[in-house]
Image 1: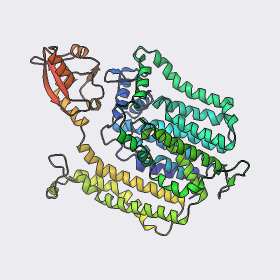
Image 2 (image 1 turned 90 degrees about the vertical axis):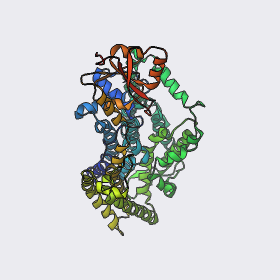
Image 3 (image 1 turned 45 degrees about the vertical axis):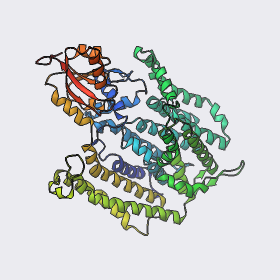
Length: 566
């Protein structure tokens, strides 16, 4: 496996990526913060304003717009406006990150393609990245983490290969600038410069920081961000953006926003985000050496010169900064996710070049087989779970109700499980062979891919049954007369708007809403306030729904036989 070509390595990675990231990608409704990325993208396509994102009829100033741009571009390129198209860009960027790692694996002081394949598998499969780019693929982390990871991968590889200093700084600057357009100048810069400073310190190359190429890289990154930020700051709708960003940052450190329980779990959750590959760190910690000044570099078994002292310094700085950040009150584990890419690159090099003990490799092989056995059982149960009848309360019905088994769901699930069943059986039957790190990494990817297929066929149908936004939109569509346009009054964040088929517009105030529409969707609290003030004369409540994100909703219309019109 270590003699793979880069093309072979990429093809293997692409198959694993497709199995892990694509099954059921668009099956569930938007959750978490996904709607805050998708709804502004829809508005951009409707009104053509790509400078200032809008959410609920108001400027959305909390984040730069790259995530909105790529989602809108995906809607346009695919010709569809749904969850699959919204989440596809994150999945593709993860593949691009893995492909970049492999493309840089040309030997010559850095990695062989086999090592690159293992590193790429590690880069795209930590639980933290899967949670953001796979299970909530329209989140910002699904874009800016792959972009910052590519910047770090380019810099680490080209520094080790002694490539042109102009390439060394300018190309990462492009990706850092794009990452800033997604998240703002944020923690990805800390991850990048942790690697840079630790590497230059270990090699005594501090003067490279003063090279004009470094300042060119900074200028490129800043220029990409400022190309949007400067005209944005001059837009009348964005005059308060600076205050919003300042408040957003400071609020996390104020007593009202601080949670002691979450704070104590920061480090455990941060460690969990790096599973399963974090488990290799204790066994390989001895491979991170610290070379004294003047000590010659080591030579790997593959024959490429590398600097174990450099890797040790980078690992130590990354680990120390990672811990320090998570010890700051108000910090969250997702802020340190950009540290995962350099961690995976270093770990893959240590696994291949330090060659773990046979005992560790056997444990890895056994873990793959145990995971494959568990997933095999789940895959065989997948069709049954997919077609299991649902009770009146939306939960699984009892065994006595199996006469209502839904074959229209169970049969396609059985077909979808056939291929992964074959792969996990292959992992199980190869008992005494395959104690080679790259092959073991591929099998871990196979197990994760099979688990993703099982999730899509057996878990997603039950998640769909518990959705709220799509059923809410259907209820509103059923009430509105044909040809009416719904006015939504200051909705703030309401993901159900994405699923409305009824034409609708958002207005930022009660006055604008009742002026422009005959049917208005308004928050229950706002309606109660207007009724109490006597400002709702001529309007009647038609429908109400509690337990909606942001508070209850009610649908009102102008009093009269036909409800009026626009």
